[in-house]
Length: 240
Image (cartoon, rainbow, N blue to C red; front, side):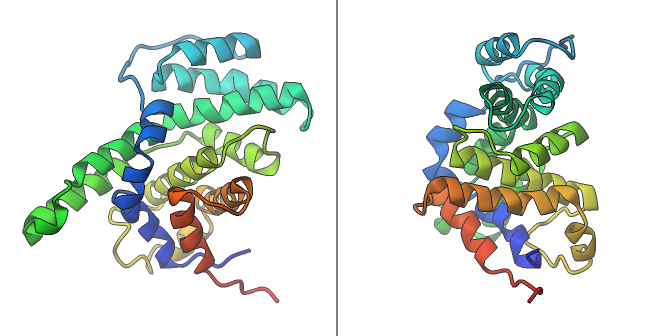
């Protein structure tokens, strides 16, 4: 297993800068979120086709997406990996988890917090902009079931999964891990948190999704993939 070092956390800060600008269309069109906050009662055994339809019609509503995670997880967990049934449920599950986490809208907020004339700002203005960007990124959250769902996806990625979805999952998992262990500034010294991060399931999974994204990119990572894989390549493997 790769050694997780403090440099990993800098991915969250860096994502609020240039890489996000390159991915703006992807995040705004995929999982930006609709800001709806109604409650939804969704049966745990809702058929996958119905869940897919609801997800498609939800316009990224994170509350509805969160309600759909349970039936989609149940369906994917009951299906055999490699089958059409698994792929359909698992692909929808990834979309539901990402929409529920609001990773897209949070990253867009982070991007918008950094003005185009950032280099011309005073130091206090730059610090304020970065703080706003980091707050947006650290607002991303995953429920325990969503982390479990992503663990299943990492073990058996469905056919048709896109690299950017894997990278978005990695960002959501990193943010959740930071929240789990109480990190408020991912650009600071994480030495006091590192042992807790190394043992955190979301943190470990984040790097599995970085590797998955690189594999799905087919050797030609996107800007976001390049950034995340660059951090990943800086880690050392303590095993022989």
